[in-house]
Amino acid sequence: MEQVMGTMGLALPWQSKLSAVQRERGTRVEPSQHLAGNATQAAANPGTEDAALAAACLSGDLSAYERLYSLHGARMKNLARNLLGTSADAEDAVQDTFLKIQRSIAGFRGQSSFVTWTFRILINTCYDARRSRLRKKEHTIEPSETDDSPRPEPRAPGSHPSLRMALERAVAALTKQQRDVFLLYEVEGFHHAEIAAMLEITETACKNTLFQAKRHLRQSLEPPRSSAAGPR
Amino acid sequence: MNVMSITCHDRDRIFENGTPAEWAALASHASSCQECAEELRAWKSISTAAQEMREYAEAPALWPRIERALAAQAQANPRRLNRWNWSWNFLPIAWQAAAAGAFVLVLAVSGGLLYRYEIRTPPTADAHFLKNRALANVERTESAYIEAIDKLAAEAKPQLDAPATALLANYKEKLLLLDSAIDDLRTQAGLNPSNAHLRYQLLAMYQEKQHTLEEILEDQR
Image (tube, helix red, strand yellow):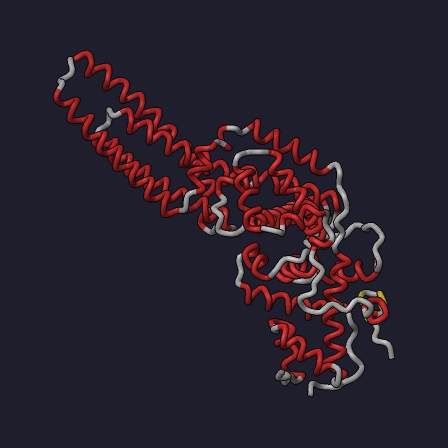
């Protein structure tokens, strides 16, 4: 019998939709494969590029910020979109992040990479925006309707829109740290070391959080098994 | 080549933190274990599904908007984005402390030399009167300025007491360093109240403290 994944009224034939793409561990599709050549060129010598970018931003050169945007803007916006739910909010968050970088570049000490630091500011900015949105809701909507989780807006048609919606709902139900780690690792393609630096946790904690997140997602997205076969 | 022995009990550990060899061994085990084959497939499917949440669509209006905002901010706050501030903050904290210590030492020595020079040349009564009045003015203005900064510090205190980000922790360190340098300078200024150089340096430290506190409060907003 075909294994069926059901979530909130959605019945998704898991196997038939996904089995065509079998990803092995370590063959994760990296964002640089999706982005234009800029990121790939930068990846040739990431440390130097990162330091040069930080120094150029430090000198107040706006073209350096443009370079930062061309390298990471799409990934920043996508992460913000997944944390906030709408493109408009995501764009506001990315803009706020750039302004904070400009204001706070004096405080950047190079303890982490510039890009890691940038994403840390972005994540904080997104959660500030969520808190601020929640406060506004509390003033305008009935208390029972307040909810911290984002309300995703429809996206451009993808290959599996119903799967994406189910996944977005399931991700929204994760804890903050599980959501951050899952989005940064599985969606944005960062490594555990980078995520650990962004979220100021250990790599071990990062791996464990990803494991917990995926386990919760699996439970949310897949119905209980009918077979009771235990581990061998 | 040795084939690693894997059982179903190893599965979750490998999912969490398995080596490439362990993953290969799990895949090999799954070929003869339906339970593990299903778990492995479902686990990988989540990663595959996550790609559905990746949408790097073009946003042509976003960069021009950010660029305008950056330019406006740079124009509005050129003082806070100046080079002196950058160079100070880019130094590691130990170097900043050493620099501040050396700075205070130089000030103390130069203050001492100036003091010795002044007591060798006794001032007239008029000069004394003018100097005392000017000094009183400086001290009055300084007190008002310190009070204003203390108010800023009180506003920023909740954030600094439990810094939520690395940036705030850095700000906290910087403020501690500034307070330490200010204390030293005030001690020197107390010993030699008419030393204008000490007053200028003290003022510079207070200004830096003010800017730092403003940045913290601005970030909060």
